[in-house]
Image 1: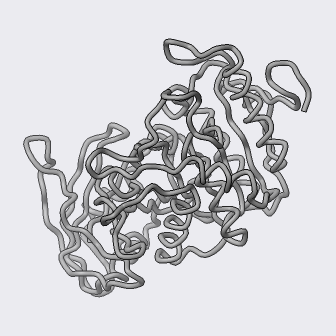
Image 2 (image 1 turned 180 degrees about the horizontal axis):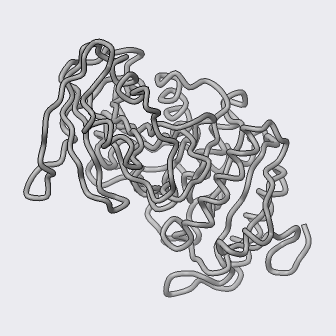
Length: 369
């Protein structure tokens, strides 16, 4: 098993002086020996802990041993032993106290093929993050480093992306429901069966919508980050409908997917719909009617699911990079609502403005719902 301790910009909930973290690791393999290293203080450097004893393979979840830092940038390694009670020498405990959070890397069988999953230790409800077309789970790092509610985080690489192998042949074009079903199996294999906050960016938003329709008892809250149009392509030839890197990619059946979205049941949950600044597109910009359709679609989704609609004041579609504070604030708001059993997330207008968003109760371009 490989576990990462990644430093976070936000102060995480740390293990206590009672060796909580090592006791958690010892649950996987009593009497485990651990190797530890310090990896600097920048937000995206990692501290890695490799457990020498193999963990049990439960529910198709398998551990990996090939994710350690290597090469000239690798930290210097030191060894320490943990006894059967999980006690370790003081230097390691000091390391644990140095604002690190636990990240476990696992490989999950989702039906004859696997996906790589990163599970970050934290509090319930768990937050599952679904990336945009062809993007790996690490794309969320810019936003998740800013979370203040410290939830358990689940990111993953869809097959053919990042560290996940391709789907097996014949690998036909898949509708959105297939991607959502795959995600549902993954969460079940991880032992997560209810009260998830699902967050999707772009194409990931369509997967989140289908996941909520397929598993209404699973999804307790949602954040849609500039979600794609149901037909996916903004205009003919505007973007590839392929998820992943050739030859490992999977084509998306957007025609069938749109039909699914148009007929799916809708759930009213604590949720936020984030959308780009009107008119903010990469060059060349589309016709004004396309921009209007995009904004109308976001407003329509918010109306249909009873969500807050928040328009970014200075961001295009790549909101994880251009407006990470806004994305993090929306996630925190929904996590808090689910955690406190509120029917809807509470958004503070002043705080929203500070992180680059404005709440609208009508169409952001001036019309009414």
